[in-house]
Image (cartoon, rainbow, N blue to C red):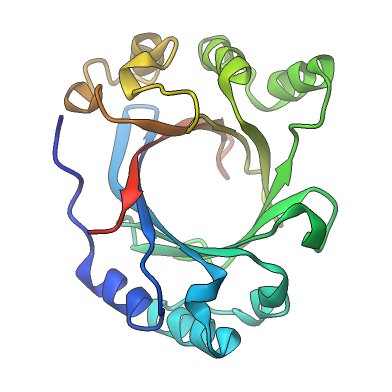
Length: 241
């Protein structure tokens, strides 16, 4: 198995210098037609890591990362039970997420509220719980968001193993996707149904050969701002080193 991707020391230092508890890290790989974007990762912390003074700490992190309009999240900090920070080397782009437990969701079905800073401005993403839908409604959702037959086949297989299903929408953008939480499935990347077919469909056969034994946390699929399909694979989740 390949060693985890190198961390961005500036990003990690800005985040961790303002937090009081250790966190978790998960790597991700985004695949589009003919492209494999690596070096992406997510840092996750309990909201207690923002204490004392959670709004001030989050605001300082946002300033350091260049995430503007953080006031759009600060209103909801007290309702959150976790906070996440995403790094993407393209740009680079930085993302801050708040996660909400069911009793304190500020909007119906809202699990995550995220603000991203990068070359596309600072859009807000909403991650909506769709696990409560019945089987027919879930299939309708898959067909609407993931019409590509190869990607749809993998997504359908993931439904059986997923511990959570989220619909991701972006304010002012056609971007839309589904996220399947597979952390409790016991799958490694090589166990993902149809993986080789997916890689061939996106024109990157043979990609990720060294990652096949990495624990698989999430599978996401949908279409981006440009309307083109993508998949994202979340792997190697565990304590930060």
